[in-house]
Every structure is written in structure tokens, then in C-alpha cells.
Amino acid sequence: MDKILHIIGAGLAGSEAAWQAAERGIKVKLFEMKPHKFSPAHKSTNCGELVCSNSLRSDDYEHNAVGLMHEEMRRFGSLVMRCADNCKVPAGGALAVDRNGFSAEITAALHAHPNIEIVSKEITDFPDGDAPLTIIATGPLTSSDFIVAILQKINHQSLSFYDAIAPVVYKESIDFDKAWYQSRYDKGDKYDYINCPMNKDEYYQFVEAITIAEKMPFHDFEKPRYFDGCLPIEVMVERGRDTLLFGPMKPVGLTNPHSTEKPYAVVQLRQDNKEDTLRNIVGFQTKLKYGEQERIFKMIPGLEKAEFARFGGIHKNTFIQSPVLLDEFLRLKSQPNVMFAGQISGCEGYVESANVGMVAGYYAAALLCGKIPVVPPKTTATGAMQAHLQDATGDYQPMNINFGIFPTIHGEITANGKFHKIKGADRKEAYCRRALEDFAKWKELVNV
Image 1: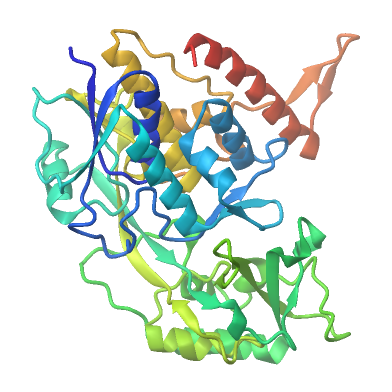
Image 2: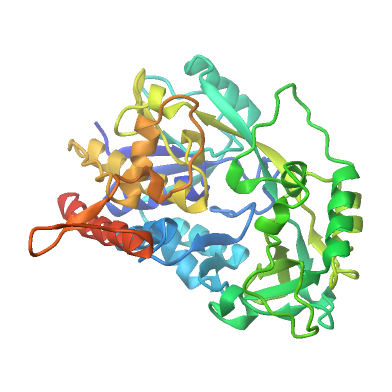
């Protein structure tokens, strides 16, 4: 078999898969339909475009599952993590990036690699049984023609949910006589977040306005199935008038320098580009109509004169039932020359998508070299994510990385032979410590 790999889709998963395979000597053809065709949510011609938040979430690899995944990917030579580190913007304990610089750097690296050819072409036909080994990494916004071809091949064993995008405002339009800089609990740099306070009356007027606002209509007959980690703000309000107080608008860990009155609710804005001219409204994913967004979000103290660089939006995400359809190496059981990676396989989130792409690229390279890939241990963040794609049962849903899908650590045996139960932060540290130890052993086995 020739050492040639086709990858369909140059998002985070496809870009990372291409990099990993190319670094192992595989010739890669990376097919991307942009700029000839764009999904409803994509705007840039670059690879690895971020369409929702610009945050890759917590970067704490000693206590946090996604931070642990960051670190594992760094140690594996991830292109996505290298570019994220190079393009990071202040975000407290999180890893947020200048979205344009980030995708531009990924694109430049892929174009410069001697083993990667980027082909600007929309793929609409499913690869046949004689095609080169192919990774489908078309993401949650797979084009309508190609998703039809995929569904026909897998006997319509797919699911879908809806994902919403948060609005972005120009920082210079924020009123700092009411807003202030501060990270929650003063983590990171104080300039990481801009805070807009609300008193009790302002909060409930805001909630009422969202409740009666016009929403964007759906264009199909499916009942929307949202991912709980990315709920539109109006859906959160539907779950209870106080829901936002325990979510994106919680007032804890913040002190308003303009008033002695403690805020009843706080809206936070996070840096969206390296120049810090844009700020996205944290947790405000929405399907409100654009006019309603402008009217309602200007009710927020400090945003009365806000100018919007981008309004929130909504799009449909599609993913397959990987536990039923794929083998342990992410290959389609009915046609092993086709693999799936990224969010179309049922992981959720930027980091998770890139991580599955990273592993898929390694798997593909090993298979093309006549080797049996080594599956990462479930005790690692990388292995736990792979296990979710293989072992999930019942109502299969997209999943962020979290310690709940790791093998449980109840405690440890002390030097005197007694069992010591581990709780709280110590338990998280134990998960991370075990993961990095086991990841190092796995890395040796795959000869990275």
C-alpha cells in the first residue's frame, strides 16, 4: 500500500491529523471546500478556523481535565497547541487565542510542510473501497451533499444537536465608567476580563426581555438537541429566571470599583484578538434575531453604546454513532479504508476535536507503514476521549473531556500499607499525575 493519506476537512481535527501523519513521513492530500464554498458559520479562508469562542478553556494541567489534554498534546508535538501557545491572548487561567492569527499560523505551517498538499475542492462523494486511506474530518458543519453521502453509507446512523455562537463587541465602545477590568478571584492578569454589573432590577428586566424576544426560526423538522456545555442564553433563561446567576452571569469573585453595592449579576467580556480591540460576551451564545440582540444586550450597564463586530448565531451540528460504526482505530467497520475524526465522531470542543485528529493522524501513519497502532491508555486524557468514542452506550452524546470518563481513583496505598482515600483537589492532582506518567509510557511505544 502506498503511503498516501487523504483527509477531508481542514478544521482543527483535519489540520492536526495532516500534521501528525506528515511528520511521520506520510504524503497527505488535505481537501478543504473553502474558499469555493463556506458553511453558514465559517468566514475565513484559513484552516483551523474558530467559529464559536476563542477560548481553548483551562490550561491548568495539574487540576483540570482539558488543561491535562493541552499538556498531553504539547508533549505529542501538536500543531494546534503550538499555534495556540504562539497566538495566546490574556484570559486568566484559560488558554484563549487571537482567532485570526491562530488559524493563519496553522495554515502557513500546513502549506510549508513538504509532505502536505492542500487541495481546494468540495468532496461530495463517499470514498469507495479502492480509495487511499481517508480520514473524514468535516466537522459538525459537514456540507449537505457530503452528509447525504455519509448517511447513505452508514445507514443513517447519525445524530445532531445545535450549537450557538456568542456575539463580539468593539472594546472602544464599552463604557468604563460602569465596566471594569478584573479576572474572577483575581486569577491571571486583571485585564483578562471586562465586567459589567447589574443590580437586581436590571437583571430581571434583562431576563424578561430575553424571554419575550424574537428568536431565529429553525429550517427543519427536528427538535433541537443542544449540547449542555454550549446552551444559548435564551435556553438557559427558559430553565429558570435565576439560571444565569449560576452560569455566565454569576457575580462571585468580583468587586465593582465604581460602587460599594455588591453586583447582583455580572456580564464578562473576554479578549477576542491579540490587539485587544474585540471582546466576546462570555457565555452569551444565542439564537436571538440580530435586531433583538442589539436591543437587549445594550441593556447591559456599560454596553449601552456597544458596537457589534459580530452578532451571535446558531448552526446545526451533525455527528455519527461512533461506538456502533467505528473500530478501535477510528476506522469504519464496514469499510476500513475510511476513518472519522473530530467533532463528526462525537467529541465536543476545540481541544477535543484537535486531540482526536492528532490520534487519527498517528493511527493512519502507523497503518500505512504496516504497523498496528497502540491505543492510548484510558488513564490519559487522550485515551479517555478515545474510550468515549468506543465505549459509550445508550443515548450517545457529544462529550467534553472530563474526569468523569477517566478510570476512577478512589485512593492510594501508603508506605505503611494502609489505604488512603483521596478527595477534592488532591484527587484531581492524582488523575493528572497518573495521566502524564502513563502518557509518557505510551509516547515511548509509538516512537514519537
